[in-house]
Length: 241
Image 1 (cartoon, one colour):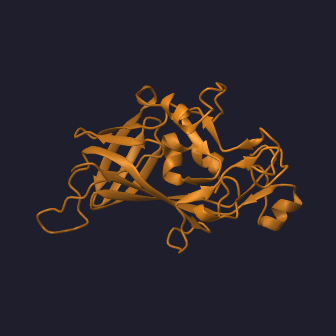
Image 2: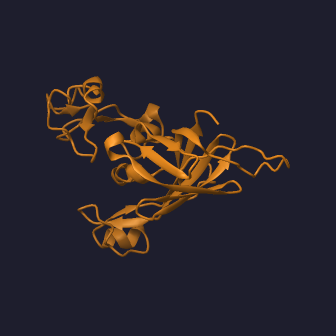
Image 3: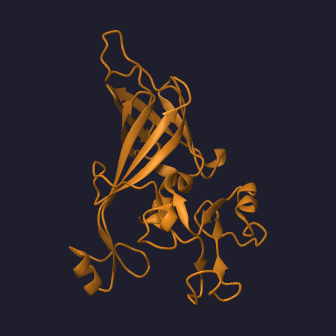
């Protein structure tokens, strides 16, 4: 999971919906999506295929090979001196980090002291261990108005709320943000499911996908780091239709 890139795109991920059967009984017809919505799940699927089995709802920050919370080490030895707290240099064992809205570490040591101190101060706590994708998104709410406009609120709060317009065609919800970017979601019941695709890419030492490589072997030969393709299935749910 390209977590650091995943976190950077959070403010622009906003697709929601609510189904209401019409008089004809057509279950695919949706009359309105007006109301308030929130993110309820996010699942990553292997090989860029959201229909594939084996999806996971989180990622292990401390061990990329771990696919479950039970197998994920809680904490990280920052100087690499040990695999657990007992064998790690004193003071080098890190159990989490407090991040600001841009994903940077907060310099204030008092808020870095614990998850409670971090979140109370209005920041995002990233545990050095297992992180559920939905926790990585943080609080994420959407409001759809009857006039065809929407407002989304995520990390930055109301001061950095995004806005745009929405339209409905059957069960397909189309949203256009203030910069003209268009996104769609498929509505079912009081939820909408969106599949976010991430193609396989080769990254350089600075984390930029500037290396042109056809596969992992070519990427490694060019001195890059290969990231497999993935698909993240995101679901939003209405708090009331």
